[in-house]
Image: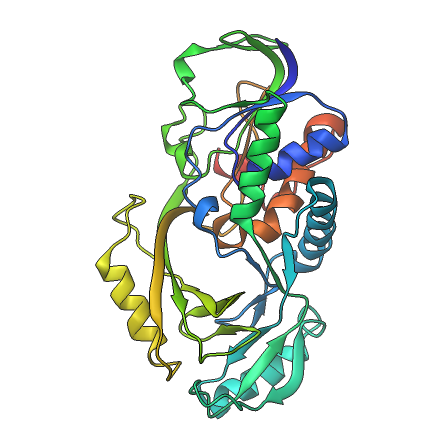
Length: 346
């Protein structure tokens, strides 16, 4: 079998790159090596503001424009609803935070995204005496629905190999790559946390961070916005809400823990006053990088091997943007931003 590309990993990064290939009539096959422990449990929020410090997300305008177009086209092609527009409310803990919010809203990179009106709390089940600030241009992508539908499509097209990728069977030549019965021009590793087992790119400083989420059923909470305080509370409909997330750097399994559940419950109970029931808990490992920039680029020795990784906690927003950058780097000789090029770690 001859194809243009082999893709290893089918999380948010892998899907984003596959869509670039589809749009440009490139042939490809995908190996799903079950390394996407972050994409499978992602909350799916996109938000152009770092709400802890009231600062702009890197390349927020460019990322948003690319992502919104990307998910709209993907919805149309898959005939599925994936992108749910929903405002994000940041709970203020004090008058000082209100003042910091107003100061941030005057900054050029933030003025389009931060409302200058304080939203007063009228929900008796939420403890927010200082009100909320609203973030514009936000939403939630249903990542699980996207992943399931995309994998089903790949399977239908005989383009998905659900097996562990065996690096020692990879044969690299000047102008081609051979793997088992497949010959390809290029190969992109989009493995997330799985990159640590990759002998070609495991030198990159990926910092895996385990995160856990719970889903609660809270009939009396009744909010139709994402609430950000000590945790995110994300409405799913039918009185269900995602609550998250935790950060853990030692236990890198995908097993849920009582410790994480207790941490989330302790924070949640300081925000809401109504009864609720936990209906689900999930865990995943995020592929983060110390400098908080993704890992994109070409192997320093093997010029037809590439990496697309390190999307961190903002994968749904940054994934389509960096996939576009990598495709144009490979096919159109475009220059990669120094911020994302893996050459910064050579």
